[in-house]
Image (tube, rainbow, N blue to C red):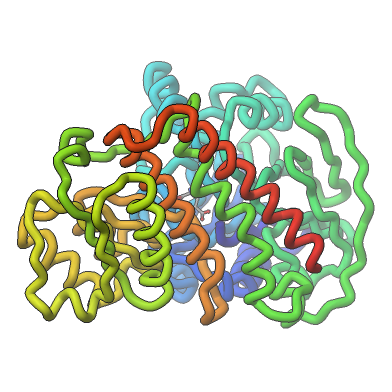
Length: 451
Ligand code: GLU
């Protein structure tokens, strides 16, 4: 969800990648890394934290070479840590990958790869992509990437390098942005135009399910059948500041237009064959059935999402719900016990009043389910169960996409509880799930109409 940069040409790749990543910093991130292919070997430096920390590490490593990929990560699977930072390298060291997005079927694919002898160093979904490309690779990287993408469910922007391909790398996208920058005898990829604007103003905006093979002299695009596709070159005449906003006048407008993708990311990994599935959930059906009251506790915008959630849950689950400001809840010695479920909502997962309210609820025996955007945050770590919103960073102060992602998760939770307690029948569940799944398309339509 954050930043990707790739380069091949006659310049030293590391400074080009670092400059590009700096231009993407405004998107927010929790870790960063780069990998360079040089003399048949992949060399990699990555770290939790800011780009300044990466620069510090780079000072003591010789990362020379003319082709590489770089990444800023916004964690979705596995906390921000050095090991979970990108790039990720396949078990034998042949393939390195940077990825923005979420691989929905990564557990199934990971189990398969483990059974084939692959081992994993991180908790990310992305490492599965590196190993799966390696597994599918014979002698053609584009082919191996296409095979892999055909097995992947979810969203991705990818940059892939392979030790057998010293002069070219491969990139691809679906539901995560990626552009190709065309220079003179050098080419680039980036998740957003500002990253490469200092080097070229000629770009191709890749479409979903397209793969591109990039060398210094060419950029060849393919569809997932392996057929060549031709895309127009777009000449960018924006300056960096307007390019950061993707051509929109304000970040808020840009983020509103990202809502369809965000709502889709919140829904689609959680609906399988008409059932709502929450991964690694410890809350049992019995606990939901015997629950006597639900507390929703949050601050600011998240509190407003909580108030809508109260309406949805009371209507669908027929259980009493109290939506409370965390700053009130934490100080007023609330009447909470183990027969109650507490839903905590926080974008950052670090809101202090909300964290204190969580501790208060748990101290009194309530099971806490949190709805959080930032993986590995304090609220995520201290909750009994976490439902991530996968909304990515939000720059505008007035929250729009994080709010809608919170609402989407609350609706799913309401439906799940209603199904467990038998207050929503199968036909209604199907109806509501259809409505939810149609939501991203409807939002997209409305964004286009208002552009
Ligand atoms: N899902 C990947 C991870 O958690 C990619 C996150 C991103 O888009 O930055 O590492």
